[in-house]
Amino acid sequence: MIKKIFSGYRTGKPGLEKVLGSLESEVMEVIWLKEAEVSVRDVYEALALKREIAYTTVMTIMGRLAEKKLLKKRKEGNAFLFIPAIAKDEFTSQMVENVVDDLLADFSDVALASFISRVGKKDRESIEKLEKMLKTAREETDGDLG
Image (cartoon, rainbow, N blue to C red; front, side, top):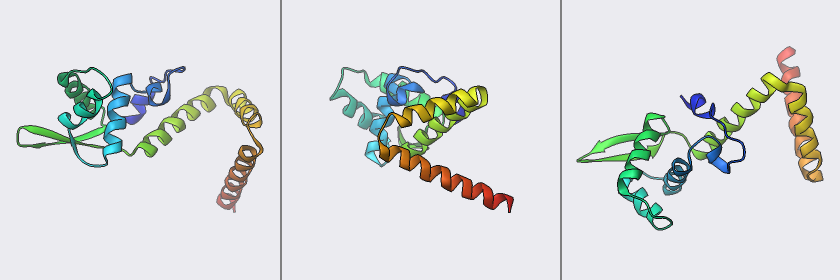
């Protein structure tokens, strides 16, 4: 299901909004920061400090995130409690991997050349990191062949 979420990649949007809606991103950020089970009320109160928002809107968004398998929910009394189904760093990693896989599948040479060009315009440290990563990848590939 996560792969389906990434299929709607939107360039020009900041951060997680590339694959999630603006409010979905805000809700996930709040929940990831809490690092514990949260209720709709918990998330609503955190968001209400920054913006005008209805409790029912937060409830709807959290329900959709659970349907998308980004949140797990369990019933406790009359309320539901939610926890992330995936850690933020894992979600981000999967998002980047999905985008890179799609670019390499359709535009391999151009994607690699563009990436190298962009890294080259950064600093020497970025180039050295890339060289180390390439060396590690080569060693792993050579180990698979031998």
